[in-house]
Length: 261
Image 1 (spheres, rainbow, N blue to C red):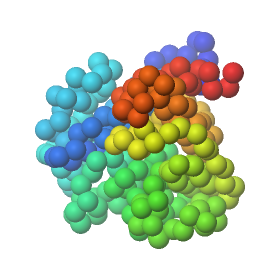
Image 2 (cartoon, helix red, strand yellow; image 1 turned 30 degrees about the vertical axis):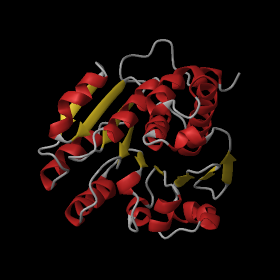
Image 3 (cartoon, one colour; image 1 turned 120 degrees about the vertical axis):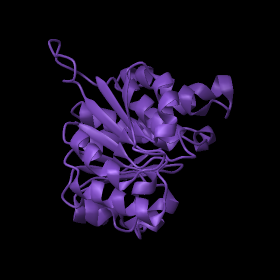
Image 4 (cartoon, rainbow, N blue to C red; image 1 turned 180 degrees about the vertical axis):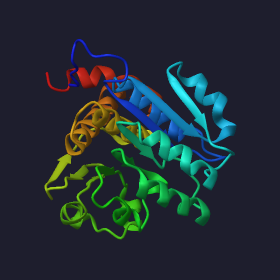
């Protein structure tokens, strides 16, 4: 359960940025932002393509939406993003971002220069990601295909996380989470309804929300994995496998509150 000081003020319980999206993908960064909001974090800043500004604003009155300069991440966005990240408690980077070479080069620069704790998902998971995040407070959230793209074997995530000082949350039927100390934790549960698009984006947003509220990256990853899987289990009796990511996100506050009870 997330706790907070009873006399705290707005912004003291988590400021989170989400950087994502492309001309054809708007939902991924929005799912991350909604999950971060459902974690209880105070302020959510969403940066995504200009063409998706209206739909992003329509999803939450609390989002502070900062559109890219165009409909894809470009070099003009680099400095505004880094300036925003310098004021954040955590950031999600990667959901839905295009994978062309020019975009990947800009993404690598942003990740390398970012100063806040990072949760890296989807397009941010590249062969260069571990080098770019070495020494940073960061969580990498690959599925098995993305782990392969990073040239990491599943049975080496513990030593790899320790070598680079990161947390690696490998998604699957059983999530395997390696901490920066090399320890590996397993989280089981959930069901096949969680294979629907967007649940990984929600997981990344929830991890960032928990980090921004004081959890360690490893603790945030284990908790977020447990909560998402438990939400799928709660929803299955009513909806079968057709509950979708939005309902999973709506379950986060309740499951978080009851997680330690």
